[in-house]
Figure 1: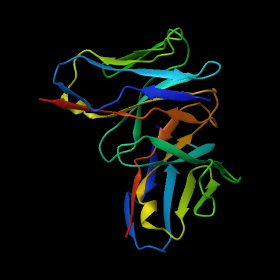
Figure 2: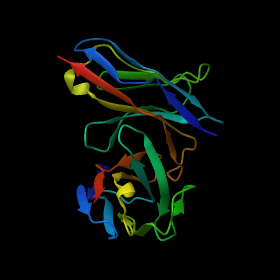
Figure 3: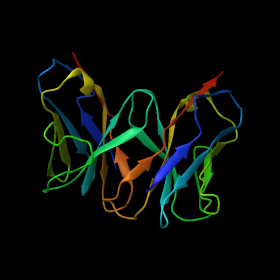
Figure 4: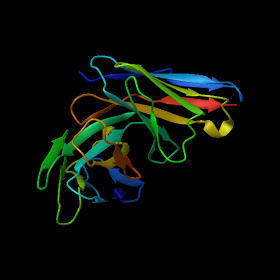
Length: 114
Length: 114
């Protein structure tokens, strides 16, 4: 149990376009979902925390208008990178948490902006 | 604030060697402590955890003991395998609730040669 999926696993988009990444909890209801960004050979940087049906809480320095997070249901959260630029290229990882304190991580999405 | 410090990598070992990856933390209160493993191109997987002082987490031959007196949670394995090659992250979580964030260390790259 406690499987989290992400789609797509890899995406290449052109500069100026928007791209949406989905995070799904497959076999449990996630009260909270988290979005992380990971640069090569670096640790995970928390971008935002979202609870179902409410606005996401963004970390300091993360542009909420650029990284749109929607948590429409207890099993789905989406991250939309708007007007993407090459510096947005990164590995994006989501995690989901249910009633216990443990976070379950998705496999990640590699975004490349050309 | 909370922080986690891991020994710098990369760490390169021969198969069947003994592994130690040091992790120390700074936190108020009584955090829970975690080790996560990330295989190439994948998300994070929980390796082991400990929720209170003197607890020992163990999984797949890996062990770590929550030492409050030294604020440490060092990861050990008696005999590593090539398949253990991955990046290891130490993390802490302050509150025993689903909505509270994880604070990660920088990650330590482990390579095990046959």
